Image 1 (cartoon, rainbow, N blue to C red):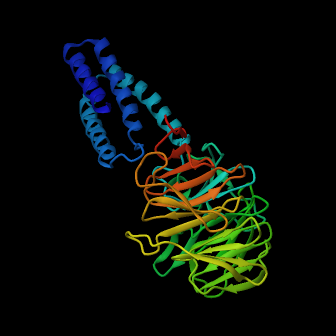
Image 2 (tube, rainbow, N blue to C red; image 1 turned 90 degrees about the horizontal axis):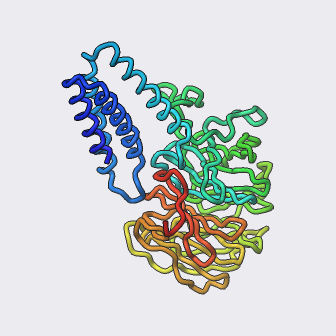
Length: 410
């Protein structure tokens, strides 16, 4: 559509210039301006659309811009003023679109999810090293840059507007010394967790610290990781009493919320994810099984084996959460679905399957339950978050491709 608009605008503008028809010139210029705006809209790819349909209009816009520049170079001064007059609203629209960038980053790579007591949803994004915060309906409330955190007690940037770019704020980023010189740190996540105070906890793998941000995004505490710590997938979780840290060396570190390590629980299999249970236990996800650890000793009180999953990953089971009713939900990367178990270990019908429609997945990632019983699941390849009701029906999807969350069925 944008290419058709551009072609019509160029044709009308050229005709008006050669025939000296001012009305045609201005109409053609206005159509070209509308074409530019339509072209901007193509920068956001619909869910599941091939990349070629995004890059082709971009290339066409660049060619059109070059032709337009060659065309207006010889224009009289009066027409130049008209071109400038069209440039002003164009720049205004560009600035508005940038500042109010809808979903959570152009092509955000969402993975780990968490929810707080107010129903807000937090999503890690390794593309820009940020944590996005949404309300329960998928509207952006802001984003947090852990790598820019000021020392505890020092006012920091907190949650910033959705449209702020990493390139815009890069001069303020902390830099890490390396043999070739200081570089801007890229923040990678092995998990995120929300504590009883609605504070956000995450692991800084560069400075080797656990970071605690309050609900405003201010860094309140930080403490060092255990010596020789090797991050596990789904490395961090929290309940009302403890913060848990999974170590790939087959152990679970148990902290209070001031950073004091209270104990360490050995596990017989490598941990791949953590999830507190409603009865105060800790569920540990392994490559092909799950186990329940009982505080304060970490004794395994229950364990069951997961069915084989055929596909590209040997460790197909990526993330886990336990619902308020005790139901266990596990994302299966190979099968692109959510595997479910009742509290007693009875298998339940799975949710999802491969695809790009609501209720389907392409590389499912983080999963979490909100205070109202709604389930949120990250669809990492489709750059989306899907909201499930308790019966497994999807009623909302939001992504980097949409200005607003999309209700299922729209």
